[in-house]
Length: 319
Image (cartoon, rainbow, N blue to C red; front, top):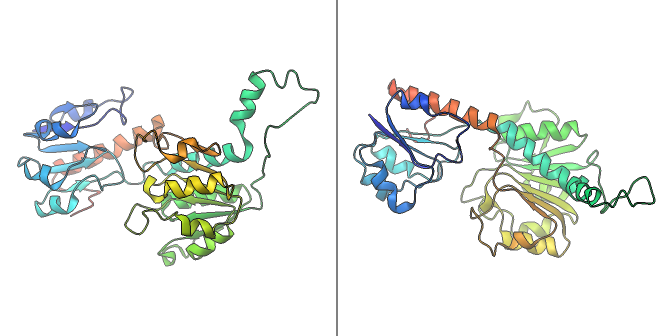
């Protein structure tokens, strides 16, 4: 049995092992796969493993030996899962592996915006504290989180974890989710409308999936509803933000700051409007990249592969 990993580098740049899979099949691992090489590299493979390398209908049609598609991610829009289902090819994803890590980075972004650790560290290292006449100084206004309103858009496992941390900071937590009835036992949080979250929150953190309804959810219209001086955080999917509109709101001073770990195109184009915004912190899609998080991801992948080999695939998104 042949298997291929099309783009394994970001998941495992060498600090983890694929040996457990090599012991099960004839495995080929590629760091990255350009579109024109996908069919060639998948030829004859029963198991195809991908992270961001697309598997379209046109591609899958040319791979008669494919029997199982395993994702190295939670999101599965990279695969034409509906066509795969029509071929009885299960597509399995990696659910809930990065909950703690994404929640952690959410607050790393927020604390950098409110406490500005980076610029103060740089100031100290450049000699400003050594030459200061006072025992302390600050380069920009600092803010406490306690007592402020933390709004969450999208309330799955990550949203729940984020709400628990916000509560520990003494913040009032409100959230919008299409299905609040599923969370009737949630504590320390009030479910409300999207408009209410936008209008009353001092911080708004986005944890929603990418769907037709959430593409450009943050746009000129919704930004006009957000209170002046609010902070926005996006650790979900880049296209949730209309980046031109967000950059405009930042440069006008309507938003106090924005922290994002995801962009509409990754890697970003040089003319991405957020790259030129001083009060915007951008990290290169690293919320999931801690060693422990990636180790957990491979653990779920192993469970998915072994379940398939036993004829009982799990974590399937299409069958």
